[in-house]
Amino acid sequence: MNNNSTARKQDQDQEEPLYDPRGLQYVEPSQTSLQCSVCCEYFTEPVSAPCGHTFCLGCITQALEVSPGCPLCRTKINPNALYDVIALSRICDELMVYCPHKSLGCDHVCQRVQIGQHLKDDCIYIGTLCRVEECRKKLLKKDLSEHMESCPYKRVDCLMCNTKVQKSQLQEHHKTCPAESVTCPHCETTRTRLRHMEHIQECPKQIVPCTLSEFGCPWTGPRFDLTATHIPQCPYEAIRGFLEQNKQRVESLEQENKHLRTIFHDLRPQVQLLRDQIGSLSESIQLMTGPGSFGDSMHGFVDTNQYQYHSQQGAPSRAHGAILGYDSNGAENELHGLERSGSGLGTVGDTHELLISENERIRSEIETLTAGLASLELKQNMAIMTESMRMQEEVQSLRAVCHGLRMQMHYLLLERQNPHGPSPPTGGGGGGGVSNSGNNGPGIKTHGPGTSSGGRPLSTSGPPRPRFSDGLGRQDTKL
Amino acid sequence: MALPKRIIKETERLLADPAPGISAIPHEDNLRYFDVIIEGPNQSPFEGGVFKLELFLPEDYPMAPPKVRFMTKIYHPNIDKLGRICLDILKDKWSPALQIRTVLLSIQALLSSPNPDDPLANDVAQHWKENENNAIQTAQEWTRKYATA
Image 1 (cartoon, rainbow over the protein chains, first blue to last red):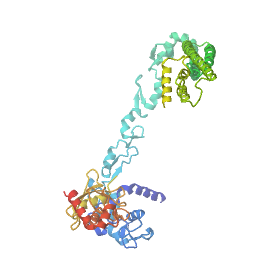
Image 2: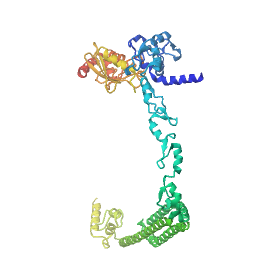
Image 3: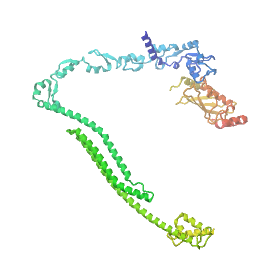
Image 4: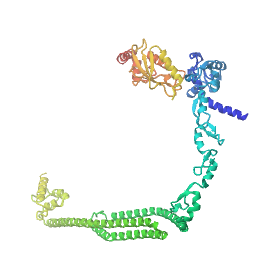
Protein backbone atom coordinates (compact mmCIF):
# COMPACT_ATOMS: atom_id res chain seq x y z
CA MET A 1 0.00 0.00 0.00
CA ASN A 2 2.68 2.35 1.07
CA ASN A 3 4.83 1.37 -1.86
CA ASN A 4 1.94 1.88 -4.15
CA SER A 5 1.29 5.43 -2.97
CA THR A 6 4.95 6.43 -3.26
CA ALA A 7 5.04 4.97 -6.73
CA ARG A 8 2.03 7.04 -7.68
CA LYS A 9 3.68 10.10 -6.19
CA GLN A 10 6.77 9.52 -8.27
CA ASP A 11 4.57 9.10 -11.27
CA GLN A 12 2.96 12.45 -10.59
CA ASP A 13 6.35 14.07 -10.11
CA GLN A 14 7.29 12.82 -13.52
CA GLU A 15 4.08 13.79 -15.23
CA GLU A 16 3.60 17.13 -13.53
CA PRO A 17 5.76 19.20 -15.88
CA LEU A 18 4.12 17.47 -18.82
CA TYR A 19 2.00 20.53 -19.53
CA ASP A 20 1.71 24.14 -18.49
CA PRO A 21 -1.91 24.81 -17.42
CA ARG A 22 -1.48 28.43 -18.52
CA GLY A 23 -0.20 27.43 -21.95
CA LEU A 24 -3.32 25.50 -22.95
CA GLN A 25 -4.98 26.32 -26.20
CA TYR A 26 -8.75 26.75 -25.90
CA VAL A 27 -11.21 25.84 -28.59
CA GLU A 28 -13.13 29.05 -27.85
CA PRO A 29 -10.45 31.55 -26.84
CA SER A 30 -12.29 34.86 -26.51
CA GLN A 31 -14.87 34.68 -23.73
CA THR A 32 -13.32 37.66 -21.95
CA SER A 33 -15.79 37.54 -19.06
CA LEU A 34 -14.24 34.26 -17.94
CA GLN A 35 -10.69 35.63 -18.13
CA CYS A 36 -8.44 36.98 -15.39
CA SER A 37 -7.60 40.63 -15.92
CA VAL A 38 -4.01 40.09 -14.86
CA CYS A 39 -2.94 37.20 -17.09
CA CYS A 40 -5.70 37.65 -19.70
CA GLU A 41 -6.35 33.89 -19.65
CA TYR A 42 -9.30 31.77 -18.52
CA PHE A 43 -9.26 31.54 -14.74
CA THR A 44 -7.20 28.85 -13.08
CA GLU A 45 -8.11 28.42 -9.40
CA PRO A 46 -10.25 31.56 -9.40
CA VAL A 47 -10.48 33.49 -6.13
CA SER A 48 -12.55 36.54 -5.28
CA ALA A 49 -11.56 39.47 -3.10
CA PRO A 50 -14.05 41.17 -0.76
CA CYS A 51 -14.36 43.97 -3.32
CA GLY A 52 -15.98 41.42 -5.64
CA HIS A 53 -13.22 41.16 -8.25
CA THR A 54 -11.99 37.75 -9.28
CA PHE A 55 -8.51 36.69 -10.34
CA CYS A 56 -6.48 33.53 -10.65
CA LEU A 57 -5.01 32.64 -7.28
CA GLY A 58 -1.48 32.81 -8.70
CA CYS A 59 -2.03 36.17 -10.39
CA ILE A 60 -3.55 37.97 -7.42
CA THR A 61 -0.94 36.57 -5.03
CA GLN A 62 1.82 37.85 -7.27
CA ALA A 63 0.11 41.22 -7.72
CA LEU A 64 -0.42 41.69 -3.99
CA GLU A 65 3.29 41.17 -3.43
CA VAL A 66 3.97 44.24 -5.57
CA SER A 67 1.11 46.43 -4.42
CA PRO A 68 -1.54 45.66 -1.78
CA GLY A 69 -4.55 46.98 -3.73
CA CYS A 70 -7.00 45.24 -6.02
CA PRO A 71 -5.65 45.52 -9.58
CA LEU A 72 -9.07 46.62 -10.78
CA CYS A 73 -10.40 48.98 -8.08
CA ARG A 74 -7.35 49.54 -5.83
CA THR A 75 -9.27 48.50 -2.70
CA LYS A 76 -6.85 47.12 -0.18
CA ILE A 77 -6.92 43.31 -0.11
CA ASN A 78 -5.88 41.07 2.72
CA PRO A 79 -4.49 37.90 1.09
CA ASN A 80 -6.26 35.82 3.78
CA ALA A 81 -9.62 37.27 2.76
CA LEU A 82 -9.49 35.74 -0.73
CA TYR A 83 -12.00 32.93 -1.23
CA ASP A 84 -12.44 30.27 -3.91
CA VAL A 85 -15.17 30.70 -6.49
CA ILE A 86 -16.15 27.07 -6.98
CA ALA A 87 -18.83 27.54 -9.65
CA LEU A 88 -16.53 29.65 -11.80
CA SER A 89 -13.77 27.12 -11.33
CA ARG A 90 -16.10 24.36 -12.63
CA ILE A 91 -17.18 26.45 -15.59
CA CYS A 92 -13.58 27.12 -16.55
CA ASP A 93 -12.59 23.48 -16.05
CA GLU A 94 -15.31 22.48 -18.48
CA LEU A 95 -13.92 24.68 -21.26
CA MET A 96 -12.74 22.62 -24.20
CA VAL A 97 -9.02 22.61 -24.88
CA TYR A 98 -6.73 21.13 -27.48
CA CYS A 99 -4.07 18.66 -26.48
CA PRO A 100 -0.77 20.54 -25.93
CA HIS A 101 0.80 18.20 -28.48
CA LYS A 102 -1.46 19.35 -31.25
CA SER A 103 1.55 20.61 -33.19
CA LEU A 104 3.07 17.10 -33.05
CA GLY A 105 -0.08 15.57 -34.44
CA CYS A 106 -2.41 14.82 -31.53
CA ASP A 107 -5.87 16.11 -32.44
CA HIS A 108 -7.45 15.25 -29.11
CA VAL A 109 -9.94 17.78 -27.73
CA CYS A 110 -11.39 17.48 -24.22
CA GLN A 111 -12.47 19.45 -21.19
CA ARG A 112 -9.66 21.31 -19.50
CA VAL A 113 -10.00 19.21 -16.36
CA GLN A 114 -9.40 16.01 -18.30
CA ILE A 115 -6.32 17.04 -20.18
CA GLY A 116 -3.98 15.75 -17.45
CA GLN A 117 -5.51 12.33 -17.65
CA HIS A 118 -5.28 12.34 -21.43
CA LEU A 119 -1.61 13.23 -21.35
CA LYS A 120 -0.88 10.64 -18.74
CA ASP A 121 -2.72 7.70 -20.27
CA ASP A 122 -3.81 8.26 -23.82
CA CYS A 123 -1.66 10.77 -25.62
CA ILE A 124 0.88 8.95 -27.74
CA TYR A 125 2.59 12.18 -28.76
CA ILE A 126 3.96 12.78 -25.31
CA GLY A 127 7.70 12.70 -24.77
CA THR A 128 9.05 9.75 -22.83
CA LEU A 129 12.33 8.01 -22.16
CA CYS A 130 13.46 4.56 -23.25
CA ARG A 131 13.03 2.23 -20.31
CA VAL A 132 16.50 0.74 -20.62
CA GLU A 133 18.70 2.31 -17.99
CA GLU A 134 21.73 2.82 -20.24
CA CYS A 135 19.74 4.17 -23.17
CA ARG A 136 17.27 6.70 -21.76
CA LYS A 137 16.71 8.03 -25.22
CA LYS A 138 14.05 10.76 -25.52
CA LEU A 139 11.27 9.82 -27.86
CA LEU A 140 7.54 10.06 -28.37
CA LYS A 141 5.40 7.51 -26.64
CA LYS A 142 4.07 6.27 -29.96
CA ASP A 143 7.60 5.39 -31.09
CA LEU A 144 8.51 3.59 -27.89
CA SER A 145 7.53 0.03 -28.80
CA GLU A 146 9.26 0.31 -32.15
CA HIS A 147 12.36 1.60 -30.42
CA MET A 148 12.30 -1.15 -27.83
CA GLU A 149 12.66 -3.67 -30.62
CA SER A 150 15.87 -2.14 -31.82
CA CYS A 151 17.25 -0.43 -28.74
CA PRO A 152 20.96 -1.23 -28.77
CA TYR A 153 21.04 -1.27 -24.97
CA LYS A 154 18.31 -3.86 -24.68
CA ARG A 155 19.42 -7.00 -22.86
CA VAL A 156 19.33 -10.31 -24.69
CA ASP A 157 20.10 -13.79 -23.47
CA CYS A 158 23.33 -15.38 -24.63
CA LEU A 159 22.22 -18.81 -25.79
CA MET A 160 25.50 -20.36 -24.77
CA CYS A 161 26.07 -19.14 -21.24
CA ASN A 162 22.54 -18.00 -20.33
CA THR A 163 23.59 -14.52 -19.17
CA LYS A 164 21.92 -11.25 -20.21
CA VAL A 165 23.94 -9.20 -22.62
CA GLN A 166 23.27 -5.84 -24.27
CA LYS A 167 22.10 -6.38 -27.80
CA SER A 168 24.78 -4.20 -29.33
CA GLN A 169 27.46 -6.14 -27.49
CA LEU A 170 26.24 -9.62 -28.32
CA GLN A 171 28.75 -10.05 -31.16
CA GLU A 172 31.52 -8.95 -28.88
CA HIS A 173 30.27 -11.26 -26.17
CA HIS A 174 30.50 -14.27 -28.41
CA LYS A 175 34.22 -13.68 -28.67
CA THR A 176 34.65 -13.95 -24.92
CA CYS A 177 31.68 -16.08 -23.82
CA PRO A 178 33.08 -18.77 -21.51
CA ALA A 179 30.57 -21.34 -22.78
CA GLU A 180 31.55 -20.93 -26.40
CA SER A 181 33.55 -23.89 -27.75
CA VAL A 182 37.05 -23.08 -28.88
CA THR A 183 39.55 -25.09 -30.85
CA CYS A 184 43.10 -25.02 -29.60
CA PRO A 185 45.22 -23.61 -32.40
CA HIS A 186 48.17 -25.83 -31.49
CA CYS A 187 46.83 -29.30 -30.88
CA GLU A 188 43.49 -28.81 -32.67
CA THR A 189 41.38 -30.26 -29.89
CA THR A 190 38.07 -28.55 -29.06
CA ARG A 191 36.65 -27.60 -25.66
CA THR A 192 34.73 -24.70 -24.04
CA ARG A 193 36.56 -21.41 -23.67
CA LEU A 194 36.68 -21.76 -19.89
CA ARG A 195 38.52 -25.04 -20.23
CA HIS A 196 40.60 -23.76 -23.07
CA MET A 197 42.12 -21.09 -20.80
CA GLU A 198 43.41 -23.87 -18.58
CA HIS A 199 44.45 -26.06 -21.47
CA ILE A 200 46.55 -23.41 -23.17
CA GLN A 201 48.83 -23.30 -20.12
CA GLU A 202 49.85 -26.90 -20.66
CA CYS A 203 49.13 -27.73 -24.29
CA PRO A 204 52.12 -29.88 -25.29
CA LYS A 205 52.05 -28.62 -28.86
CA GLN A 206 52.15 -24.92 -28.05
CA ILE A 207 55.27 -23.21 -29.25
CA VAL A 208 57.10 -21.82 -26.21
CA PRO A 209 60.44 -20.09 -25.73
CA CYS A 210 63.19 -21.58 -23.61
CA THR A 211 62.78 -21.00 -19.88
CA LEU A 212 66.10 -19.18 -19.98
CA SER A 213 65.10 -16.94 -22.85
CA GLU A 214 65.40 -13.93 -20.61
CA PHE A 215 69.15 -14.52 -20.42
CA GLY A 216 69.39 -14.77 -24.17
CA CYS A 217 68.58 -18.35 -25.18
CA PRO A 218 67.11 -18.08 -28.70
CA TRP A 219 65.42 -21.49 -28.74
CA THR A 220 61.66 -21.82 -29.32
CA GLY A 221 59.71 -24.97 -29.93
CA PRO A 222 56.72 -27.08 -28.86
CA ARG A 223 56.33 -27.50 -25.13
CA PHE A 224 56.87 -31.25 -25.14
CA ASP A 225 60.22 -30.69 -26.80
CA LEU A 226 61.40 -28.24 -24.19
CA THR A 227 61.92 -30.53 -21.22
CA ALA A 228 62.58 -33.59 -23.29
CA THR A 229 65.30 -32.41 -25.65
CA HIS A 230 66.21 -28.75 -25.29
CA ILE A 231 66.85 -28.29 -21.56
CA PRO A 232 69.58 -30.97 -21.40
CA GLN A 233 71.38 -29.34 -24.33
CA CYS A 234 70.75 -25.68 -23.54
CA PRO A 235 74.09 -23.89 -23.11
CA TYR A 236 72.48 -21.41 -20.73
CA GLU A 237 71.33 -24.17 -18.43
CA ALA A 238 74.99 -24.85 -17.51
CA ILE A 239 75.59 -21.37 -16.13
CA ARG A 240 72.12 -20.97 -14.75
CA GLY A 241 73.30 -20.44 -11.17
CA PHE A 242 75.66 -17.68 -12.23
CA LEU A 243 73.01 -16.00 -14.36
CA GLU A 244 70.52 -15.98 -11.57
CA GLN A 245 73.03 -14.62 -9.12
CA ASN A 246 73.92 -11.93 -11.59
CA LYS A 247 70.29 -11.07 -12.07
CA GLN A 248 69.83 -10.64 -8.36
CA ARG A 249 72.86 -8.40 -8.16
CA VAL A 250 71.67 -6.23 -11.01
CA GLU A 251 68.34 -5.89 -9.29
CA SER A 252 69.88 -4.82 -6.02
CA LEU A 253 72.09 -2.37 -7.90
CA GLU A 254 69.11 -0.91 -9.63
CA GLN A 255 67.39 -0.41 -6.34
CA GLU A 256 70.43 1.26 -4.87
CA ASN A 257 70.67 3.47 -7.89
CA LYS A 258 67.09 4.54 -7.41
CA HIS A 259 67.80 5.34 -3.80
CA LEU A 260 70.83 7.41 -4.73
CA ARG A 261 68.87 9.26 -7.30
CA THR A 262 66.36 10.38 -4.71
CA ILE A 263 69.25 11.53 -2.52
CA PHE A 264 70.60 13.53 -5.42
CA HIS A 265 67.22 15.12 -5.96
CA ASP A 266 67.12 16.11 -2.32
CA LEU A 267 70.58 17.64 -2.58
CA ARG A 268 69.84 19.69 -5.65
CA PRO A 269 67.91 22.48 -3.87
CA GLN A 270 70.73 22.70 -1.35
CA VAL A 271 73.22 23.35 -4.13
CA GLN A 272 70.88 25.96 -5.55
CA LEU A 273 70.69 27.59 -2.13
CA LEU A 274 74.46 27.69 -1.85
CA ARG A 275 74.72 29.21 -5.28
CA ASP A 276 72.24 31.89 -4.33
CA GLN A 277 74.18 32.64 -1.22
CA ILE A 278 77.35 33.09 -3.25
CA GLY A 279 75.47 35.38 -5.61
CA SER A 280 74.23 37.57 -2.78
CA LEU A 281 77.70 37.61 -1.24
CA SER A 282 79.32 38.77 -4.47
CA GLU A 283 76.65 41.42 -4.82
CA SER A 284 77.38 42.75 -1.38
CA ILE A 285 81.10 42.82 -2.22
CA GLN A 286 80.36 44.82 -5.33
CA LEU A 287 78.32 47.23 -3.26
CA MET A 288 81.17 47.57 -0.79
CA THR A 289 83.82 48.38 -3.41
CA GLY A 290 81.67 50.10 -6.00
CA PRO A 291 82.11 53.82 -6.83
CA GLY A 292 80.17 55.15 -3.88
CA SER A 293 79.87 58.41 -2.01
CA PHE A 294 82.60 60.89 -2.20
CA GLY A 295 82.88 63.05 0.90
CA ASP A 296 81.31 66.47 0.79
CA SER A 297 84.08 68.17 2.61
CA MET A 298 87.77 67.76 2.09
CA HIS A 299 88.22 65.93 5.32
CA GLY A 300 85.35 63.66 4.67
CA PHE A 301 86.74 62.91 1.28
CA VAL A 302 90.18 62.10 2.59
CA ASP A 303 88.74 59.94 5.31
CA THR A 304 86.51 57.92 3.08
CA ASN A 305 89.23 57.73 0.53
CA GLN A 306 91.58 56.18 3.01
CA TYR A 307 88.91 53.89 4.29
CA GLN A 308 87.97 52.80 0.85
CA TYR A 309 91.53 52.18 -0.04
CA HIS A 310 92.02 49.98 2.94
CA SER A 311 88.85 48.13 2.44
CA GLN A 312 89.66 47.58 -1.19
CA GLN A 313 92.89 46.00 -0.29
CA GLY A 314 91.41 43.90 2.45
CA ALA A 315 87.95 43.03 1.38
CA PRO A 316 88.38 41.28 -1.93
CA SER A 317 91.02 38.90 -0.75
CA ARG A 318 89.11 38.13 2.41
CA ALA A 319 85.87 37.67 0.58
CA HIS A 320 87.52 35.64 -2.06
CA GLY A 321 89.03 33.37 0.53
CA ALA A 322 85.75 33.03 2.28
CA ILE A 323 83.88 32.15 -0.85
CA LEU A 324 86.44 29.65 -1.95
CA GLY A 325 86.64 28.09 1.45
CA TYR A 326 82.95 27.92 1.94
CA ASP A 327 82.17 26.65 -1.46
CA SER A 328 84.87 24.07 -1.73
CA ASN A 329 84.22 22.84 1.76
CA GLY A 330 80.51 22.46 1.16
CA ALA A 331 80.86 20.88 -2.22
CA GLU A 332 83.60 18.54 -1.12
CA ASN A 333 81.58 17.47 1.84
CA GLU A 334 78.73 16.61 -0.41
CA LEU A 335 81.02 14.81 -2.74
CA HIS A 336 82.53 12.83 0.03
CA GLY A 337 79.12 11.94 1.28
CA LEU A 338 78.10 10.78 -2.12
CA GLU A 339 81.24 8.84 -2.61
CA ARG A 340 80.81 7.12 0.68
CA SER A 341 77.22 6.19 0.07
CA GLY A 342 77.90 5.06 -3.45
CA SER A 343 81.19 3.28 -2.94
CA GLY A 344 81.68 0.40 -5.25
CA LEU A 345 78.91 1.48 -7.57
CA GLY A 346 79.62 2.51 -11.11
CA THR A 347 76.23 4.16 -11.58
CA VAL A 348 77.01 6.89 -9.06
CA GLY A 349 79.48 8.17 -11.62
CA ASP A 350 77.13 10.57 -13.31
CA THR A 351 75.86 12.19 -10.12
CA HIS A 352 79.45 12.46 -9.04
CA GLU A 353 80.44 14.07 -12.29
CA LEU A 354 77.53 16.42 -12.11
CA LEU A 355 78.58 17.64 -8.71
CA ILE A 356 82.17 18.07 -9.82
CA SER A 357 81.13 20.09 -12.84
CA GLU A 358 78.92 22.17 -10.60
CA ASN A 359 81.88 22.80 -8.35
CA GLU A 360 84.02 23.65 -11.36
CA ARG A 361 81.46 26.11 -12.57
CA ILE A 362 81.17 27.83 -9.24
CA ARG A 363 84.95 28.07 -9.07
CA SER A 364 85.13 29.69 -12.51
CA GLU A 365 82.37 32.05 -11.47
CA ILE A 366 84.42 33.09 -8.49
CA GLU A 367 87.42 33.62 -10.74
CA THR A 368 85.50 35.94 -12.99
CA LEU A 369 84.25 37.73 -9.91
CA THR A 370 87.79 38.31 -8.62
CA ALA A 371 88.84 39.58 -12.04
CA GLY A 372 85.90 41.98 -11.94
CA LEU A 373 86.93 43.10 -8.50
CA ALA A 374 90.48 43.82 -9.65
CA SER A 375 89.30 45.92 -12.55
CA LEU A 376 86.94 47.76 -10.22
CA GLU A 377 89.83 48.49 -7.88
CA LEU A 378 91.81 49.95 -10.78
CA LYS A 379 88.91 52.10 -11.85
CA GLN A 380 88.42 53.26 -8.31
CA ASN A 381 92.06 54.27 -7.99
CA MET A 382 91.87 56.27 -11.18
CA ALA A 383 88.78 58.04 -9.96
CA ILE A 384 90.40 58.88 -6.67
CA MET A 385 93.49 60.21 -8.41
CA THR A 386 91.58 62.55 -10.66
CA GLU A 387 89.35 63.65 -7.82
CA SER A 388 92.30 64.43 -5.56
CA MET A 389 93.99 66.39 -8.37
CA ARG A 390 90.92 68.49 -8.74
CA MET A 391 90.67 68.99 -5.04
CA GLN A 392 94.29 70.06 -4.90
CA GLU A 393 93.68 72.65 -7.52
CA GLU A 394 90.68 73.89 -5.66
CA VAL A 395 92.64 74.12 -2.41
CA GLN A 396 95.24 76.11 -4.19
CA SER A 397 92.71 78.56 -5.53
CA LEU A 398 91.11 78.81 -2.11
CA ARG A 399 94.47 79.47 -0.62
CA ALA A 400 94.98 82.30 -3.09
CA VAL A 401 91.61 83.75 -2.19
CA CYS A 402 92.46 83.52 1.49
CA HIS A 403 95.66 85.31 0.82
CA GLY A 404 93.83 88.09 -0.97
CA LEU A 405 91.42 88.42 1.91
CA ARG A 406 94.21 88.65 4.39
CA MET A 407 95.85 91.38 2.37
CA GLN A 408 92.61 93.28 2.24
CA MET A 409 92.14 93.04 5.96
CA HIS A 410 95.61 94.32 6.30
CA TYR A 411 94.94 97.27 4.14
CA LEU A 412 91.68 98.13 5.89
CA LEU A 413 93.34 98.05 9.26
CA LEU A 414 96.04 100.30 7.96
CA GLU A 415 93.48 102.69 6.57
CA ARG A 416 91.53 102.87 9.81
CA GLN A 417 94.70 103.74 11.63
CA ASN A 418 95.33 106.48 9.10
CA PRO A 419 93.41 109.67 10.18
CA HIS A 420 93.22 111.03 6.58
CA GLY A 421 91.20 108.16 5.32
CA PRO A 422 87.55 108.47 4.29
CA SER A 423 86.55 106.99 7.64
CA PRO A 424 83.24 108.78 8.41
CA PRO A 425 80.60 106.08 7.89
CA THR A 426 77.88 108.51 6.76
CA GLY A 427 80.17 110.19 4.36
CA GLY A 428 78.73 111.03 0.98
CA GLY A 429 82.15 110.60 -0.38
CA GLY A 430 85.61 111.50 -1.03
CA GLY A 431 86.39 111.42 -4.68
CA GLY A 432 89.05 108.78 -4.42
CA GLY A 433 87.57 107.02 -1.43
CA VAL A 434 84.78 104.56 -1.45
CA SER A 435 81.53 104.93 0.47
CA ASN A 436 80.32 102.22 2.82
CA SER A 437 77.26 101.51 0.80
CA GLY A 438 79.37 101.18 -2.23
CA ASN A 439 81.60 98.82 -0.43
CA ASN A 440 78.79 96.68 0.95
CA GLY A 441 77.02 96.09 -2.30
CA PRO A 442 79.63 94.26 -4.23
CA GLY A 443 81.34 92.99 -1.10
CA ILE A 444 78.49 90.62 -0.45
CA LYS A 445 78.60 89.07 -3.86
CA THR A 446 82.23 88.10 -4.14
CA HIS A 447 85.51 88.67 -2.51
CA GLY A 448 86.99 90.21 -5.56
CA PRO A 449 85.17 93.55 -5.66
CA GLY A 450 85.68 93.99 -1.93
CA THR A 451 89.40 93.92 -2.28
CA SER A 452 89.39 96.10 -5.26
CA SER A 453 87.10 98.67 -3.72
CA GLY A 454 89.31 98.64 -0.70
CA GLY A 455 92.37 99.44 -2.67
CA ARG A 456 93.97 98.78 -5.94
CA PRO A 457 97.32 97.77 -4.63
CA LEU A 458 96.14 94.29 -3.86
CA SER A 459 94.75 93.50 -7.31
CA THR A 460 94.72 89.73 -6.86
CA SER A 461 91.61 89.51 -8.97
CA GLY A 462 91.39 90.56 -12.58
CA PRO A 463 91.35 94.09 -13.77
CA PRO A 464 87.68 94.32 -14.95
CA ARG A 465 86.31 93.95 -11.45
CA PRO A 466 87.71 97.12 -9.89
CA ARG A 467 86.36 99.06 -12.82
CA PHE A 468 82.89 97.64 -12.28
CA SER A 469 82.87 98.34 -8.59
CA ASP A 470 84.30 101.77 -9.15
CA GLY A 471 81.48 102.55 -11.45
CA LEU A 472 79.00 101.34 -8.90
CA GLY A 473 80.62 103.41 -6.23
CA ARG A 474 80.38 106.45 -8.44
CA GLN A 475 76.76 105.82 -9.14
CA ASP A 476 76.05 105.60 -5.47
CA THR A 477 77.75 108.87 -4.79
CA LYS A 478 75.71 110.54 -7.47
CA LEU A 479 72.53 109.35 -5.85
CA MET B 1 13.28 33.70 -21.57
CA ALA B 2 9.96 32.91 -23.14
CA LEU B 3 7.55 35.69 -23.90
CA PRO B 4 4.53 35.51 -21.54
CA LYS B 5 1.30 34.60 -23.24
CA ARG B 6 -0.31 37.82 -22.07
CA ILE B 7 2.19 39.92 -24.05
CA ILE B 8 1.55 37.84 -27.16
CA LYS B 9 -2.19 38.24 -26.69
CA GLU B 10 -1.94 41.98 -26.13
CA THR B 11 0.28 42.42 -29.18
CA GLU B 12 -2.09 40.41 -31.35
CA ARG B 13 -5.01 42.51 -30.22
CA LEU B 14 -3.12 45.81 -30.67
CA LEU B 15 -2.29 44.84 -34.23
CA ALA B 16 -5.68 43.38 -35.11
CA ASP B 17 -7.86 45.97 -33.43
CA PRO B 18 -5.88 49.18 -32.79
CA ALA B 19 -7.38 51.99 -30.66
CA PRO B 20 -8.33 55.05 -32.72
CA GLY B 21 -5.42 57.43 -33.21
CA ILE B 22 -2.97 54.96 -31.70
CA SER B 23 -0.67 52.41 -33.29
CA ALA B 24 1.87 50.22 -31.55
CA ILE B 25 4.16 47.89 -33.49
CA PRO B 26 6.64 45.56 -31.80
CA HIS B 27 10.25 45.29 -32.97
CA GLU B 28 11.00 42.08 -34.80
CA ASP B 29 14.14 41.37 -32.82
CA ASN B 30 12.69 42.33 -29.45
CA LEU B 31 9.00 41.71 -28.96
CA ARG B 32 9.01 43.65 -25.68
CA TYR B 33 9.94 46.87 -27.48
CA PHE B 34 7.21 48.79 -29.33
CA ASP B 35 7.27 51.74 -31.72
CA VAL B 36 4.19 53.77 -30.85
CA ILE B 37 2.48 56.55 -32.79
CA ILE B 38 -0.19 58.70 -31.12
CA GLU B 39 -2.13 61.28 -33.06
CA GLY B 40 -2.73 64.59 -31.32
CA PRO B 41 -6.37 64.59 -30.06
CA ASN B 42 -8.92 66.89 -31.63
CA GLN B 43 -9.57 70.17 -29.85
CA SER B 44 -6.22 70.02 -28.15
CA PRO B 45 -3.12 72.14 -28.84
CA PHE B 46 -1.60 69.00 -30.34
CA GLU B 47 -4.29 68.45 -32.96
CA GLY B 48 -2.82 67.47 -36.30
CA GLY B 49 0.44 66.31 -34.74
CA VAL B 50 1.79 62.80 -35.05
CA PHE B 51 3.85 61.89 -31.99
CA LYS B 52 6.32 59.03 -31.89
CA LEU B 53 6.88 57.19 -28.63
CA GLU B 54 8.84 54.15 -27.53
CA LEU B 55 7.37 51.59 -25.15
CA PHE B 56 9.28 48.84 -23.40
CA LEU B 57 7.81 45.98 -21.36
CA PRO B 58 10.19 45.15 -18.49
CA GLU B 59 11.01 41.62 -17.39
CA ASP B 60 8.34 41.59 -14.64
CA TYR B 61 5.53 43.04 -16.75
CA PRO B 62 2.59 42.99 -15.99
CA MET B 63 3.60 43.21 -12.34
CA ALA B 64 5.70 46.28 -13.21
CA PRO B 65 4.54 49.12 -15.50
CA PRO B 66 5.80 49.50 -19.06
CA LYS B 67 8.38 52.22 -19.72
CA VAL B 68 7.10 54.84 -22.15
CA ARG B 69 8.87 57.90 -23.56
CA PHE B 70 8.05 60.54 -26.17
CA MET B 71 10.54 60.55 -29.05
CA THR B 72 8.97 63.61 -30.69
CA LYS B 73 9.52 67.01 -29.07
CA ILE B 74 6.36 68.23 -27.42
CA TYR B 75 5.44 71.37 -25.45
CA HIS B 76 3.48 69.90 -22.54
CA PRO B 77 3.67 70.62 -18.78
CA ASN B 78 3.73 66.89 -17.91
CA ILE B 79 6.33 65.84 -20.47
CA ASP B 80 9.93 66.99 -20.16
CA LYS B 81 12.39 67.72 -22.91
CA LEU B 82 13.75 64.15 -22.73
CA GLY B 83 10.26 62.87 -23.48
CA ARG B 84 9.64 61.43 -20.01
CA ILE B 85 6.00 61.39 -19.01
CA CYS B 86 4.57 62.32 -15.63
CA LEU B 87 1.63 59.95 -15.37
CA ASP B 88 0.61 58.21 -12.14
CA ILE B 89 -0.34 54.87 -13.76
CA LEU B 90 3.19 54.62 -15.19
CA LYS B 91 4.55 54.86 -11.68
CA ASP B 92 2.95 54.21 -8.27
CA LYS B 93 -0.61 53.80 -9.59
CA TRP B 94 0.28 50.96 -11.93
CA SER B 95 -1.97 47.92 -11.74
CA PRO B 96 -1.42 44.58 -13.43
CA ALA B 97 -4.96 44.84 -14.76
CA LEU B 98 -3.84 47.72 -16.97
CA GLN B 99 -2.56 46.97 -20.45
CA ILE B 100 -0.51 48.55 -23.20
CA ARG B 101 -3.71 49.74 -24.80
CA THR B 102 -5.00 51.43 -21.62
CA VAL B 103 -1.64 53.06 -20.98
CA LEU B 104 -1.54 54.54 -24.47
CA LEU B 105 -5.13 55.74 -24.16
CA SER B 106 -4.22 57.45 -20.90
CA ILE B 107 -1.30 59.20 -22.60
CA GLN B 108 -3.62 60.33 -25.37
CA ALA B 109 -5.97 61.70 -22.71
CA LEU B 110 -3.06 63.48 -21.05
CA LEU B 111 -2.50 65.35 -24.33
CA SER B 112 -6.12 66.51 -24.25
CA SER B 113 -5.93 67.73 -20.67
CA PRO B 114 -2.50 68.98 -19.58
CA ASN B 115 -2.14 69.21 -15.83
CA PRO B 116 0.18 72.10 -14.92
CA ASP B 117 -0.41 71.49 -11.19
CA ASP B 118 1.59 68.26 -11.31
CA PRO B 119 4.36 69.32 -13.65
CA LEU B 120 7.42 67.59 -14.96
CA ALA B 121 8.64 70.45 -17.13
CA ASN B 122 8.54 73.34 -14.64
CA ASP B 123 9.08 76.19 -17.11
CA VAL B 124 6.31 74.90 -19.39
CA ALA B 125 3.95 74.49 -16.43
CA GLN B 126 4.76 78.02 -15.25
CA HIS B 127 4.02 79.34 -18.72
CA TRP B 128 0.77 77.36 -18.80
CA LYS B 129 -0.37 78.78 -15.47
CA GLU B 130 0.61 82.38 -16.14
CA ASN B 131 -0.62 82.71 -19.69
CA GLU B 132 -2.53 79.68 -20.86
CA ASN B 133 -3.43 81.08 -24.27
CA ASN B 134 0.16 81.93 -25.03
CA ALA B 135 1.31 78.52 -23.84
CA ILE B 136 -1.25 76.79 -26.02
CA GLN B 137 0.00 78.85 -28.93
CA THR B 138 3.57 77.67 -28.27
CA ALA B 139 2.33 74.09 -28.06
CA GLN B 140 0.59 74.49 -31.42
CA GLU B 141 3.75 75.96 -32.92
CA TRP B 142 5.84 73.07 -31.58
CA THR B 143 3.31 70.61 -32.94
CA ARG B 144 3.52 72.21 -36.37
CA LYS B 145 7.30 72.39 -36.20
CA TYR B 146 8.17 68.97 -34.82
CA ALA B 147 5.12 66.71 -35.01
CA THR B 148 3.88 67.01 -38.56
CA ALA B 149 4.80 64.06 -40.66
